[in-house]
Every structure is written in structure tokens, then in C-alpha cells.
Amino acid sequence: MNKPILGSLGRNIQNLRMTKGLSLSQLAQDAGLAKSNLSRIEQGDGNPTLETIWRLAVQLNVPFGDLVASVESPLGENGVQVRLIDQGDDNPRVDVYWMSCAPNTIKQSEPHIAGTTEAITLISGKLLAGENDDLRYLDIGKTHTFAADVPHRYQTDDSWATLMMVITYAKQECAKQAYVKQDDTKQDLLS
Image (cartoon, rainbow, N blue to C red):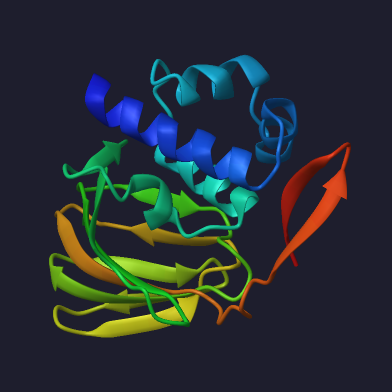
């Protein structure tokens, strides 16, 4: 990722962390990162993997798209490129991604936010995908929907695969704002 993309991503992560009232140390620990690595990411100096960004999204309890919304070019590593196409604003939240996987790629994904599902439609190539214990071969134009709040993966053979991924997050209850007076200051608390 180039410097402007890293800076934008870092600011998004930092703003969400502070909004949630999490310290740098707490978020780093929850996401399984060294505090110094998270600090570099927030400052736009790190180079996080896609899995690191997903883990941060899960720990912040926000869709992946909230962290990468300002990134206009594909994010990629190890033969996989992902680009946010559209962010929904309904409840439940639905985001759409384009994804490309190089030949002979195995992309293991950690569980996303509880209640998340993925519907993937193969555009080109060949793909084996789904929950780790229920992988399916997809033909071009076919869709497979599966739980994404469990470990899942994408696997290609000797050809490239391109797919559209529709991620649907669990329906959220409306957040209520409450103000608590503490040391003569008001704090926002989400309930």
C-alpha cells in the first residue's frame, strides 16, 4: 500500500478505536498485535496484512469496509486482491467487494463479526470456497452463501479466479447515547 492509503487507513483505525474508548494497548492485545505495530499502523507507517485489517475490524466490531472505505485501489497480498465496491447503509449492513485470487492460492480467513455471512459469485476461473468444513466448488456464474463468522477459505487451482463477494452483517439494534457525568465532563457511552 502506498503512503496516502496507509495514512487514511491508520486514521480510520485510530478514530474508530478512540470512538470505542479503547486504548492502543487494549486494541493491540485484543487483535493479537504488538502495541508498537498498531501504533505504526495508526501513524500510517505500518504495512498491515489483509488479515490484520480484518482482525482489527472484528475487535472494533465494525465492518471491514469501515476501515478501507477511503482506499480506492485494491488491497492485496499473497496472490489475493480485494477492493470495496459499495458500502451499504441499511440495517442489516451489506457491503460488496471484488476479489481476485492468483493461481494455486489458498486464502484462509479468520472469523468475521458474529452473524456475518458471505455470498460469493464466481466471475471467472475455478474456485473452492466456503466454511472450512463445508467447501464447495463454484462454476462461473454460480453463487455460494456461507457463514463468515467461522474460519473459511478460498482456494484456486492452476488458474486465476475473480469473484464478487457480498458480505451481510448481523442486524444491529439502534445504539443509544447516554451521558454520564464524571469529573465534571460528559462521556458518550454506547449501550
